[in-house]
Length: 309
Image (cartoon, rainbow, N blue to C red; front, side, top):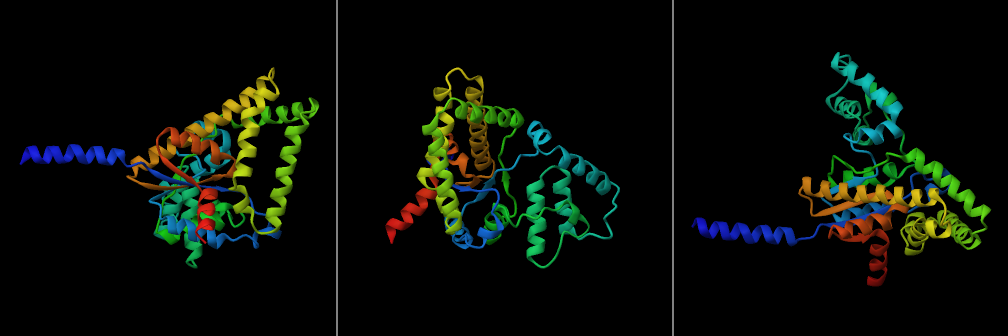
């Protein structure tokens, strides 16, 4: 009997290993303008996410153990979180906050900012409020979180989002990126510049027509960003900044892919939704496929849907 069990366990482990993690990557924008926001079809995106039925949702936020990224990107938030932690330890809110309000506060005090915002947002959605922690809450009504991620997660019954971003070296990346853009103009790399301006014009038109999410997930938009980043060192061969921009971007996306993969395994997830800024999609997809995940982009999903009708 033991032998049979051992053989079964062996083959079961092989079968589990052979099952690739399925991942859907949704490219988003981080801010929706008031004049165009109401035109976008957020309900369809939410329904598509619900139909995909992921086990977990990974978001473009920094994990609490990545202190280097946190210190560089959110130093003021960390100071506010440290102050809140002292107040919580002194039990200053015991008599004036509900259990759910306190849960959000404990998340915030441990630098898990976006899960705190998610919990407080869910309270507001159920006609409650963050209570005494309102000053720590962020209004995310114009972001992908308020319009897509939070509503879809609630619909799925997901109560915790997985933070997978990496931002250490962001300031140097932005500084080098600005230098590269100036060099492209100075060296009259007009073809690259015209291509970029063409995409920006289409972006604006898609926004005005209520097709912004659809557009940023299309292959044309994806190719425009991946090509721009990957060809910089070739367009400016003696530019250290151009090589640095490409290397930094790839490092960030590779680490994000590793964190998505690790989150899937730590949560025993076989289906994963990833929501990131649209510029990340193609490179994250590349690195996830290197990890032998089965990856579909939201643009590919929309293409499949159009072929079915």
